[in-house]
Amino acid sequence: MSEYLIDEGALSAGTLYRLMSGAICPRPIAWVATCDADGRSNLAPFSFFNVASVNPPVLAFSPLLDGEGRAKDTLNNIEATGECVVHVGSEDLIEALNATSASLAPGEDEFVHAGLDKAAMPGVRVPRIATAPIAFGCTRYDVIRFGDQPLAGSLVLARVVSLYVDEHIWDGRHVDMEVLKPTGRLAGNDYLRATDRFVIERPR
Image (cartoon, rainbow, N blue to C red; front, side, top):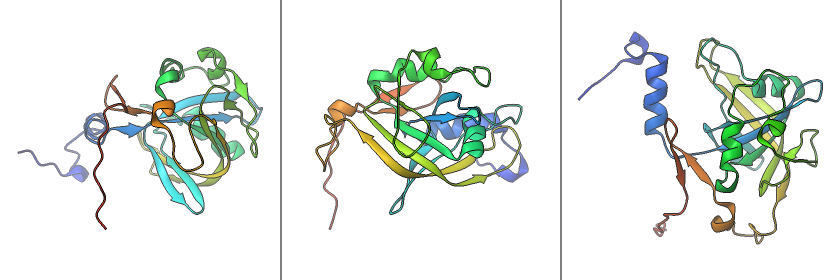
């Protein structure tokens, strides 16, 4: 058995990242579109992602600072414009999603880089991915920063103000997993399909 006191610096940030991302999984993937102050589009995936609230509807995702302590374009754009569009990473678009994780120069358009078409999203100025089956148009609710050191996270709380849902994945009550095909993030280069599911009845 191994035990570590984090505040004593027993594990480096890089080691903690590998441990936490490997143990806390599978994680859903937020594929987040933003625009900078000049209207240039950005698109990037984040697997530190979940629902934070339903009423009001709020999504939560956390971009990490890079190894030099620099913020990613997504965070800078949300701070500048207060808007984003969150898509759910799906198997049918996983190659494009992976392409948008590349480190492009600020201002370069990941939609173009990944060969993705844009569509207007109601309620926000940020475009959505035209072929994504579900998208959430959001405005900034809050951003909680956990420091300025390398790999520090910033928890983005994004309030949902509009929805796009493909008619084939939602009947007004249930989401069809066979159509959505959500993917889960593991560690390293590993992903998980949502094809091996099982049911357990919830106790009353």
